[in-house]
Amino acid sequence: MRGKAEIEDIGGGKSAIIISELPYQVNKALLVAKIADLVKEKKIEGISDLRDESDRRGIRVYVELKRDAKPKQVLNNLYKHTALQTTFPVNMVALVDNTPQTCSLKLILEEYVKHRHDVVRRRSEFELKEARAREHILEGLKIAVDHIDEVIAIIKKSAHADEAKNKLMTRFKLSDLQATAILDMQLRRLAALERQKIEDELAMIRETINYLEDLLAHPEKILRVVKDELARLKEKYGDNRKTKVFKSKVGEFSDEQLIPNEKAIITMSQSGYIKRVPRSTFKMQERGGKGVIGMSTKEEDTIDQLVTASTHDNMLFITDRGRVYQVRVWDIPEGSRQSKGQAVVNLINIESGERVTSVLAYSLKKDEQKEHGVKYILMATKNGTVKKSKLTEYENIRRSGIVAIKLEAGSPKGEAGDELAWAKLTSGSDDILLVTHEGKSIRFKEDEVRPTARDTMGVRGVLLGKEDFVVSVDIINQENKGADFLTIMEKGIGKKTAIRDFPKQRRGGQGVKVAVVKDKTGKVVVSQIVPDECESVILTSTKGQVVKLPITSVPRLGRATSGVILMRFTDKSDTIAAATCLTK
Image (cartoon, rainbow, N blue to C red; front, side, top):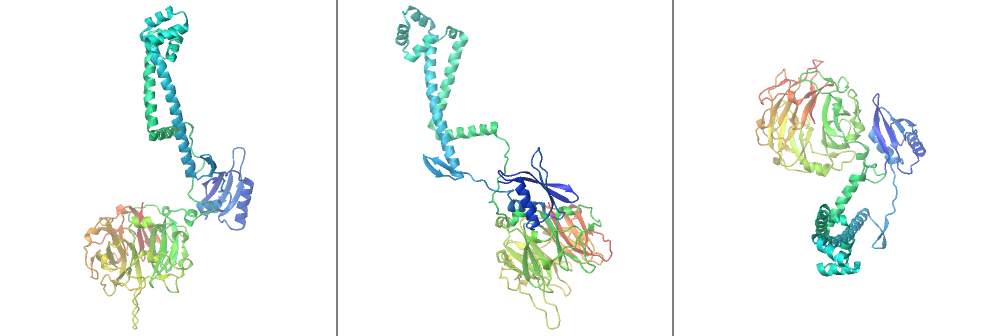
């Protein structure tokens, strides 16, 4: 049993938990003292004040929370650690066929239905017996009123009642009960309306007899009567439940229950500072606006990653050294719109000099993975190598991370080695679209990349120029093949292009233009498929500027175009760092 508690906004960015009902036999004073002890022992954090405001109007325990507390998490911890949620035992021993038995809830319901079935059957048998008896009497009365003159004459000529009864039985072939009923009949029953009443009642009784005989002959119809009677009881006496039913045992709280599943935006800077903010943090603006400050950064730092996810999702961090680390989204600290966030090294054990280049969020629920067709992780390196592995190989990642891909090492001449830069979830039968910094793109079938183990090298996805590198990897499937492809350049220029405009090619070629790259546009920084449910796009600059605009304000143009201004910068030296689509 769980007490009634509601979370209220008390202003100033703070919330309070108001407890208005307690479980049966729970002492309010002991509960308040227990909460105070838990706060003192720091077993429950986030509570700033605790008051008992109960009066003659009812129970009211006021639990004020700190500004940075998570109300739902605090409330679930109160359920977990106090008597605000408790059990109440019920003796389920009952006589089943005259034998004492401990019953399950299912057995109790089954026996109740059997009992109601017997009650309705025996009641129907009794009503049928009574109806047949009444029919018998009414048939005699009808005979009497149909031959009333002769009946009256027989009665008048009889010396006493017994003689009259015998004569009536002999003349009209009546039973003893029918003859007695005729003799007991009042004179007013001889009126025309009264005679009609007898005929109507007889017809109604016969209908009742037919119904009851049919009911007793079909047990499934008796069950329907039981159901209808229960429905009428519910309609007459039913009211709203005073308790709620939860599918869990007392004290058993998973992290999912302690933390609400909410949509969030994950932002990470190039130097490794990460934070999580609610989707509602950013308001919609018009295209070409300057936006707001979305993250405080150091002068030399820039925004690098922007991902939308749910707090219950799993987040994979892919590093430039080809390793993968894992955390749950709720483990990422929540920050304000302007806060810098927390260093990612506090979440994952990356090595010195190792840098997160891509983050990937997905649901751990198998049915959701199946619904979205998720089977593989496809990775691409900065130098255009692609590699595919099964998602199941990344389910249990140790804290120190695991190898995701074997990278090409640097040359003795000082040339830099390859870096793992991108990762996407695939179904195994999708198309892959790679986009490069210089504005090239190549689309090829996923089955050209066979799945391999984690610690293997990939194959060539795109042939790059000397200064070029891959900036994005996207997956084209049956759901989004008719969608648009968003391309954004360094200087805030962007556009949408229909995916059908990108021709299918063989893996390893140079590809075709994704956009016309000029000095005034800068090179391609962000490119991604626009999902059907996308309603807006959020752009972040290297200086921490953020703008959120409706996706409908971004025009659809061909591949051989540059685009329009999506964002203007306060600092002329600023450039686009990251962007992502926000779904409804």
